Figure: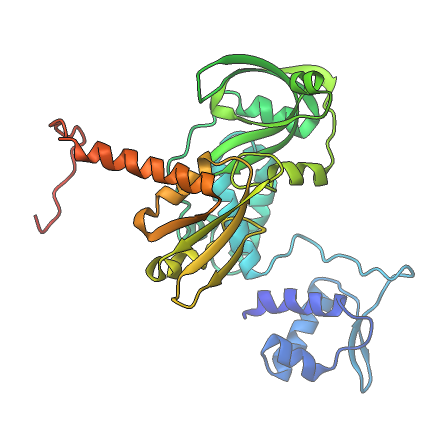
Length: 345
């Protein structure tokens, strides 16, 4: 650790306890000698104004207010790992939603720049060492800011929406609950008032922002849905499809593919185990199968669906259709993408 990290770490150590911390323990936790530890304490006291008391034969302790609180250090403090995470977040915000969050993020960026300057770095230097790659993402479309504002300001929305599976145009009045960024695409999780009125119960839906043709903010407060209910609906089942999971997929991967899949997180409530042959058996809850089938198919012959029978049949039918398509002679089509020759070509 450098001095910056050690100052931050010592502040956290002293805040976490009410009894004095011996100098030898400070040295061990900060990985430094006694002289360096005393210099760090001096920085806390003299440069940052922290009230650090020394108790003879016991160690150092923060002086606390009558209520037991310790005043915050001036400025905004992060350790090295947290600061780099913020830089990565800044890069993600800039690429995914330019203009929506940038104005709000600018004050924090300026503070980050000042902190990085103390370490001889700039935000651009750190960001240049971090890549955020997008794959098969969809542009959120022109209504991102309208939907984001309504979600954060808690207003209802009227959406003119085109369903992706059949291009059917519908209009929905919704109470937006959360914005979700999933697989490089944006969605708004919302309470659908039309569906709710028809069913007599709260109906939650996810709407892809790139399928919104128009979003109109209503001068009416959004109806709130508690976080637990949102999590049960949107996070309980597999993938972006909401709903209470009513089935469990059991997948068995070959030993070769297990080296990768055993380290992956497909679902928060998944279960996984190696069998006697070194194959990885994965169990994931799901309510709707389309996204799960796509993820199974990308592993080709390296995975087998063991249960349920309906999912096994669905995957088998997709594989049979793919095999039949490749059994046909391909129509000769010249590629339209011109690629540069490699140096060895």
